[in-house]
Amino acid sequence: MAIRVGMLWEILVIAFDTLRANKLRSALTILGVVIGVMSIVAMTALITGFSDSLEGQIRAFGSNTVFVQKLGFQSFSSGRSFLELIKRPNLTNDDAKALGESPLVGEVGLQIGGGGPFAAIERMSFAGQATKRFAVIGATSNWGDMNFIPFMSGRFFGDFEVLNRRNVIVLGYSPAEAMFLTRGIDPLGKVIRVGRDSYTVVGVMDKRPAALGDANGFAVIPYTTYEKRYPTPRFRGIVFRPLTIVVSSAEGVNVDELRTEIESIMRARHRLKLGEENDFDTVTADFIVAFLRQFTKAVVLALFVISSIALMVGGIGVMAIMTISVTERTREIGVRKALGARRREILVQFLIEAVFLTMLGGLLGIALGAGIGYAVNVFAGFPVSLPLWSFALGVGFSATVGILFGMLPAVKASKLDPIEALRYE
Image 1 (cartoon, rainbow, N blue to C red):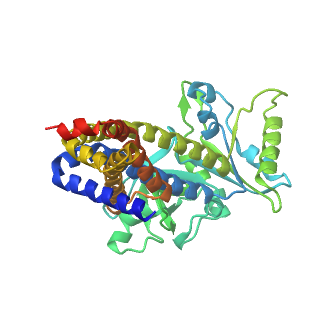
Image 2: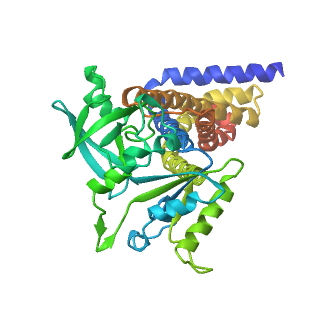
Image 3: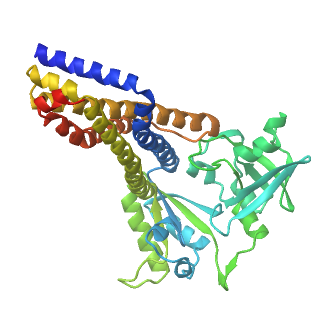
């Protein structure tokens, strides 16, 4: 065992000396491996960071919440066309009231706008300071509680203000920062312009982390005020009311039971026959998270396939330099064989040298990939995650490349005839 360990150490020293003696050639050889592993680690850090952050935001809605929509994430993910989905009947306030009467339902809220092609997007201004265009959402008084967004100051509007269509507004962190916080002004009670209308600020929501884009770039007004200010949009003559009904379960009711109850009530209200598909969507946080995870796995797999091309280029370079090394060290191989070295030992020597080269490239790629991930996080604020399995994959890929592409030169070296090798000039 001591002899084998000593030989292994000697081989590593020889490999390092070979690398040091041919710095430029060795650097060019492992460049492909460095690029491939760096791509894997950096992109994995960004993709998993984005996925984890977005999953956290989705789960913030609660595991017992169901979103009922005319057309939503569920239908689009199944591949249906927009023209087919928009012909569905609009959701109504009466649908929400009917759902609220079920004993399985705890609380029901409404939201209009906030996303999609029919969202209301407006500039906001106060005392000469204007913002960029932010989303304006119409909602019921329980919207803040059902979305679990913490408050920085003030309050959410109440039922009285919703019923009387008052021009009150709750600001997300981004518009509040742009108009007030950067100037040290307390926004509560101030009257701001939103498009052509004036609103009194009654509350400001706290900042929340963003997985993509600005998660704090919005403002909320009573949904009755929203309907008065923004007429129901039309698309090719079809009236589209962008209403989402948010339903939470009663105590002791799980989300599957709640979803089944919602579908039963909505199908009865829409007079759907047995066997007919739902003309509405019921989406839960778990469904979105499951789809997100599948999407992330597909993206990571595609990334590995693309990065493997760079690794193959690096492997070809390793095979080329190891073949040259075998030719340059033919006499050395002959001497080692003459002194009793077996074919297996020669093969292992050159194979370890190849693996040493590629693993060095893999370690450099891991360091650079992690550095890129942290740099993006620091300078762009993009969420980053560096799972240990991405490091293990980087090392494993680089070692595999060394074994696969170093095998041919190693076999060639092990098969050299010692007499012919000693005569080689």
